[in-house]
Length: 408
Image (tube, rainbow, N blue to C red; front, side):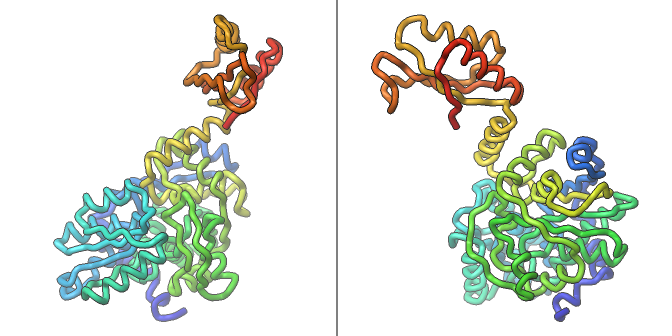
């Protein structure tokens, strides 16, 4: 390993953990009966979305800040971030009287921009993705003489993130596996080093979004490669190029890398909200998504799943909830064609009443494409009790000879 990666050791992770412990939440890692039943494993959920800034990034950012020289602090710091690293830097730098500037992609969720500003940083929105924001941050760093804080490709940051691994080992006796989200690799590098150097038999699984599998491609190529830009709800791990420090650590310590798709991530967000009463962002839910969809080679091992962040845009969350309800048959939208005359709607609502389907919204359409003169189409959003209830409702409409169809 190069000099950067070689600085990531179990001893340095322990030093980092002692350095930051008074300012970082020792986050809970609780056994989940529901998730264990759903996945066929013994699942423990590590809730680092409960940190002050809503994500694990505080650990690495704080450890790096606490190792800066007085001259580096005086110059001020700058970082590029899709949100969570920026919030962490803003909060802990401001707490220590250090000026912080954060460059974020233009598409960064508003919730992350607002939070970063509230924590005291100057925000610069630049570029269509993280890589363009990163390039701008480096330019400003050089032009303004600032101290650059990398979100993952830095030994001090990696060691700070590794404190999560030490906590999990303490919280889950007999731990057999840990599943970790992967973007640039800073989190899994630190966690994997802490765990593997303590007990090499514990399996470490990394999870990426299939839209940006930068670490997987780096492993295949044997070196970091830049992959094409893409959009994902897991914006916190939307990294196009793995780190040259993190890659050798992943190659040394990580047993398996897998990917999950957007629907699987969205479903995992909803499962965490319903079953664990915890809010996860896309990047924070990918580890559970891998278990729920059997993406790993794990069996019935005692497994810790890292929920690493909870800073999700509310409008995105609303869409995820609605789509999840429709997918599970707890909400349905149908279009029914009726003769446009008084009383026509009464018969339809009688069927809905008999089927105990609750009307959420109705929209009448008399002039749309395919609607005959003298008819009307009514779009109805209904609250239902599951797929069997939806099927029973459809059968009742068929029996009453109503022309109807599902709409999305």
